[in-house]
Image 1 (cartoon, rainbow, N blue to C red):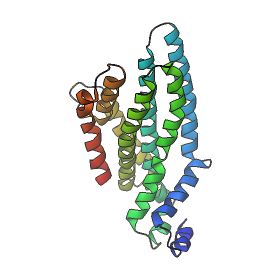
Image 2: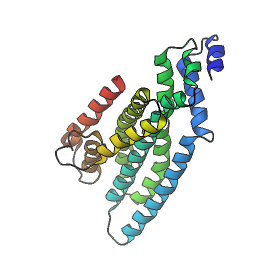
Image 3: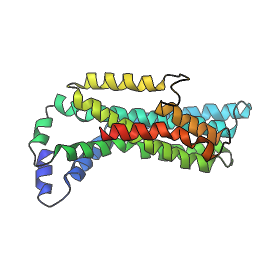
Image 4: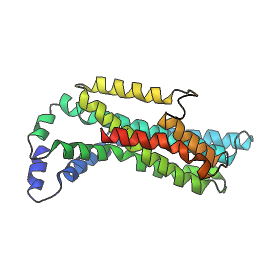
Length: 240
Protein backbone atom coordinates (compact mmCIF):
# COMPACT_ATOMS: atom_id res chain seq x y z
CA UNK A 1 0.00 0.00 0.00
CA UNK A 2 2.82 2.41 0.83
CA UNK A 3 4.41 1.89 -2.62
CA UNK A 4 1.08 2.66 -4.28
CA UNK A 5 0.74 5.88 -2.30
CA UNK A 6 4.22 7.04 -3.28
CA UNK A 7 3.64 6.18 -6.94
CA UNK A 8 0.22 7.79 -7.24
CA UNK A 9 1.08 10.82 -5.15
CA UNK A 10 3.49 11.81 -7.91
CA UNK A 11 0.46 12.04 -10.20
CA UNK A 12 -1.19 14.61 -7.92
CA UNK A 13 -3.86 12.16 -6.76
CA UNK A 14 -5.07 13.11 -3.25
CA UNK A 15 -3.40 10.85 -0.71
CA UNK A 16 -6.58 10.32 1.29
CA UNK A 17 -8.31 9.08 -1.86
CA UNK A 18 -5.57 6.50 -2.41
CA UNK A 19 -5.89 5.31 1.18
CA UNK A 20 -9.69 5.20 0.82
CA UNK A 21 -9.54 3.18 -2.41
CA UNK A 22 -7.23 0.67 -0.79
CA UNK A 23 -9.41 0.44 2.31
CA UNK A 24 -12.57 -0.13 0.25
CA UNK A 25 -10.87 -2.93 -1.67
CA UNK A 26 -9.66 -4.58 1.53
CA UNK A 27 -13.04 -4.26 3.24
CA UNK A 28 -15.40 -5.22 0.42
CA UNK A 29 -13.48 -7.69 -1.75
CA UNK A 30 -13.66 -10.68 0.54
CA UNK A 31 -13.05 -8.47 3.59
CA UNK A 32 -14.74 -7.99 6.95
CA UNK A 33 -17.24 -5.39 5.75
CA UNK A 34 -18.64 -7.78 3.14
CA UNK A 35 -19.04 -10.63 5.63
CA UNK A 36 -20.59 -8.41 8.30
CA UNK A 37 -23.09 -6.97 5.83
CA UNK A 38 -24.02 -10.47 4.65
CA UNK A 39 -24.67 -11.54 8.23
CA UNK A 40 -26.71 -8.37 8.73
CA UNK A 41 -28.80 -9.18 5.63
CA UNK A 42 -29.62 -12.65 6.95
CA UNK A 43 -30.56 -11.36 10.40
CA UNK A 44 -32.70 -8.59 8.90
CA UNK A 45 -34.49 -11.14 6.73
CA UNK A 46 -35.28 -13.24 9.81
CA UNK A 47 -36.53 -10.21 11.73
CA UNK A 48 -38.71 -9.17 8.78
CA UNK A 49 -40.28 -12.63 8.64
CA UNK A 50 -41.01 -12.56 12.38
CA UNK A 51 -42.51 -9.08 12.21
CA UNK A 52 -44.62 -9.97 9.17
CA UNK A 53 -45.93 -13.03 11.02
CA UNK A 54 -46.83 -10.91 14.04
CA UNK A 55 -48.56 -8.43 11.73
CA UNK A 56 -50.85 -11.23 10.59
CA UNK A 57 -51.63 -11.84 14.25
CA UNK A 58 -52.34 -8.08 14.68
CA UNK A 59 -49.56 -7.70 17.26
CA UNK A 60 -47.71 -4.93 15.41
CA UNK A 61 -48.85 -2.07 13.21
CA UNK A 62 -46.99 -1.22 9.97
CA UNK A 63 -45.55 1.87 11.66
CA UNK A 64 -44.14 -0.19 14.53
CA UNK A 65 -42.68 -2.82 12.20
CA UNK A 66 -40.96 -0.23 10.02
CA UNK A 67 -39.59 1.54 13.09
CA UNK A 68 -38.21 -1.68 14.61
CA UNK A 69 -36.57 -2.63 11.30
CA UNK A 70 -35.02 0.80 10.91
CA UNK A 71 -33.86 0.75 14.52
CA UNK A 72 -32.13 -2.60 14.01
CA UNK A 73 -30.47 -1.41 10.80
CA UNK A 74 -29.05 1.70 12.47
CA UNK A 75 -27.82 -0.21 15.52
CA UNK A 76 -26.08 -2.87 13.44
CA UNK A 77 -24.53 -0.34 11.05
CA UNK A 78 -23.17 1.64 14.00
CA UNK A 79 -21.66 -1.53 15.40
CA UNK A 80 -20.09 -2.48 12.05
CA UNK A 81 -18.62 1.00 11.58
CA UNK A 82 -17.29 0.97 15.15
CA UNK A 83 -15.64 -2.44 14.71
CA UNK A 84 -14.05 -1.55 11.38
CA UNK A 85 -12.86 1.76 12.81
CA UNK A 86 -11.42 -0.03 15.84
CA UNK A 87 -9.21 -2.07 13.49
CA UNK A 88 -8.02 0.86 11.40
CA UNK A 89 -4.90 1.93 13.30
CA UNK A 90 -4.27 -0.78 15.89
CA UNK A 91 -4.65 -3.38 13.14
CA UNK A 92 -1.91 -1.69 11.12
CA UNK A 93 0.32 -1.70 14.21
CA UNK A 94 -0.38 -5.36 14.92
CA UNK A 95 0.30 -6.39 11.31
CA UNK A 96 3.49 -4.28 11.34
CA UNK A 97 2.34 -2.26 8.32
CA UNK A 98 1.94 1.11 10.03
CA UNK A 99 5.62 1.98 9.57
CA UNK A 100 5.32 1.71 5.79
CA UNK A 101 2.41 4.16 5.81
CA UNK A 102 4.19 6.66 8.04
CA UNK A 103 7.29 6.61 5.85
CA UNK A 104 5.30 7.72 2.80
CA UNK A 105 5.05 11.46 1.96
CA UNK A 106 1.49 11.55 3.31
CA UNK A 107 0.27 13.40 6.37
CA UNK A 108 -1.20 11.39 9.20
CA UNK A 109 -4.41 13.39 8.89
CA UNK A 110 -4.91 12.15 5.31
CA UNK A 111 -4.23 8.56 6.36
CA UNK A 112 -6.82 8.85 9.13
CA UNK A 113 -9.32 10.50 6.76
CA UNK A 114 -8.99 7.72 4.17
CA UNK A 115 -9.41 5.00 6.77
CA UNK A 116 -12.34 6.79 8.39
CA UNK A 117 -14.22 7.13 5.09
CA UNK A 118 -13.53 3.49 4.25
CA UNK A 119 -14.97 2.31 7.57
CA UNK A 120 -17.96 4.60 7.06
CA UNK A 121 -18.93 2.82 3.81
CA UNK A 122 -20.90 0.19 5.72
CA UNK A 123 -23.71 2.63 6.57
CA UNK A 124 -24.98 3.39 3.02
CA UNK A 125 -24.75 -0.34 2.23
CA UNK A 126 -26.83 -1.22 5.29
CA UNK A 127 -29.41 1.48 4.46
CA UNK A 128 -29.73 0.26 0.87
CA UNK A 129 -30.36 -3.29 2.09
CA UNK A 130 -32.92 -2.13 4.67
CA UNK A 131 -35.10 -0.05 2.34
CA UNK A 132 -36.75 -3.01 0.50
CA UNK A 133 -37.56 -4.67 3.83
CA UNK A 134 -39.18 -1.48 5.12
CA UNK A 135 -41.18 -1.18 1.91
CA UNK A 136 -42.44 -4.74 2.38
CA UNK A 137 -43.38 -4.23 6.02
CA UNK A 138 -45.04 -0.86 5.44
CA UNK A 139 -47.88 -2.64 3.59
CA UNK A 140 -48.47 0.49 1.51
CA UNK A 141 -48.61 2.70 4.60
CA UNK A 142 -47.44 6.31 4.28
CA UNK A 143 -44.83 5.68 6.98
CA UNK A 144 -42.35 4.34 4.42
CA UNK A 145 -41.30 7.71 2.98
CA UNK A 146 -40.68 9.45 6.33
CA UNK A 147 -38.89 6.35 7.62
CA UNK A 148 -36.40 6.43 4.75
CA UNK A 149 -35.91 10.20 5.05
CA UNK A 150 -35.50 10.51 8.81
CA UNK A 151 -33.75 7.18 9.18
CA UNK A 152 -31.17 8.23 6.61
CA UNK A 153 -30.72 11.55 8.43
CA UNK A 154 -30.23 9.97 11.85
CA UNK A 155 -27.91 7.29 10.49
CA UNK A 156 -25.86 9.88 8.63
CA UNK A 157 -25.38 11.72 11.93
CA UNK A 158 -24.63 8.69 14.12
CA UNK A 159 -22.64 6.47 11.73
CA UNK A 160 -19.74 8.94 11.28
CA UNK A 161 -19.73 9.56 15.03
CA UNK A 162 -19.38 5.90 16.02
CA UNK A 163 -16.97 5.16 13.19
CA UNK A 164 -14.82 8.06 14.36
CA UNK A 165 -15.09 6.74 17.91
CA UNK A 166 -13.70 3.39 16.74
CA UNK A 167 -10.83 5.11 14.93
CA UNK A 168 -10.12 7.21 18.02
CA UNK A 169 -9.97 4.13 20.26
CA UNK A 170 -7.83 2.32 17.69
CA UNK A 171 -5.41 5.25 17.64
CA UNK A 172 -4.73 4.91 21.38
CA UNK A 173 -4.65 1.09 21.58
CA UNK A 174 -1.61 -0.99 20.66
CA UNK A 175 -3.49 -4.22 19.97
CA UNK A 176 -6.68 -5.15 18.18
CA UNK A 177 -7.98 -7.12 21.15
CA UNK A 178 -7.79 -4.07 23.39
CA UNK A 179 -9.30 -1.82 20.73
CA UNK A 180 -12.21 -4.20 20.07
CA UNK A 181 -12.84 -4.74 23.79
CA UNK A 182 -12.89 -1.01 24.60
CA UNK A 183 -15.05 -0.18 21.56
CA UNK A 184 -17.55 -2.93 22.35
CA UNK A 185 -17.74 -1.84 25.99
CA UNK A 186 -18.47 1.76 24.99
CA UNK A 187 -21.11 0.63 22.50
CA UNK A 188 -22.89 -1.53 25.11
CA UNK A 189 -22.97 1.41 27.51
CA UNK A 190 -24.77 3.48 24.89
CA UNK A 191 -27.34 0.69 24.45
CA UNK A 192 -28.18 0.53 28.17
CA UNK A 193 -31.68 1.82 28.94
CA UNK A 194 -32.05 4.66 31.41
CA UNK A 195 -34.61 7.38 31.81
CA UNK A 196 -32.20 10.17 32.75
CA UNK A 197 -29.82 9.27 29.91
CA UNK A 198 -32.38 9.33 27.13
CA UNK A 199 -31.75 13.01 26.40
CA UNK A 200 -27.97 12.63 26.69
CA UNK A 201 -27.50 9.25 25.02
CA UNK A 202 -27.23 9.92 21.25
CA UNK A 203 -28.60 6.50 20.29
CA UNK A 204 -31.59 6.57 22.66
CA UNK A 205 -32.38 10.19 21.82
CA UNK A 206 -32.21 9.41 18.10
CA UNK A 207 -34.53 6.43 18.42
CA UNK A 208 -36.96 8.48 20.49
CA UNK A 209 -36.93 11.02 17.66
CA UNK A 210 -37.79 8.33 15.10
CA UNK A 211 -40.43 6.78 17.35
CA UNK A 212 -42.16 10.11 17.86
CA UNK A 213 -42.31 10.78 14.12
CA UNK A 214 -43.06 7.30 12.79
CA UNK A 215 -45.13 5.67 15.53
CA UNK A 216 -46.57 8.44 17.71
CA UNK A 217 -47.39 10.78 14.80
CA UNK A 218 -45.76 13.80 16.42
CA UNK A 219 -44.60 16.75 14.35
CA UNK A 220 -40.99 17.60 13.58
CA UNK A 221 -41.25 20.69 15.73
CA UNK A 222 -42.23 18.60 18.76
CA UNK A 223 -39.37 16.13 18.30
CA UNK A 224 -36.56 18.22 16.79
CA UNK A 225 -34.85 18.82 20.14
CA UNK A 226 -34.11 15.08 20.42
CA UNK A 227 -31.54 15.42 17.63
CA UNK A 228 -29.38 17.71 19.75
CA UNK A 229 -27.62 14.84 21.53
CA UNK A 230 -26.71 12.91 18.31
CA UNK A 231 -25.46 16.09 16.60
CA UNK A 232 -23.40 17.23 19.58
CA UNK A 233 -21.92 13.77 20.03
CA UNK A 234 -21.01 13.57 16.33
CA UNK A 235 -19.34 17.00 16.34
CA UNK A 236 -17.37 16.17 19.50
CA UNK A 237 -16.09 12.76 18.42
CA UNK A 238 -15.32 13.67 14.80
CA UNK A 239 -13.56 16.82 16.03
CA UNK A 240 -11.38 14.75 18.35
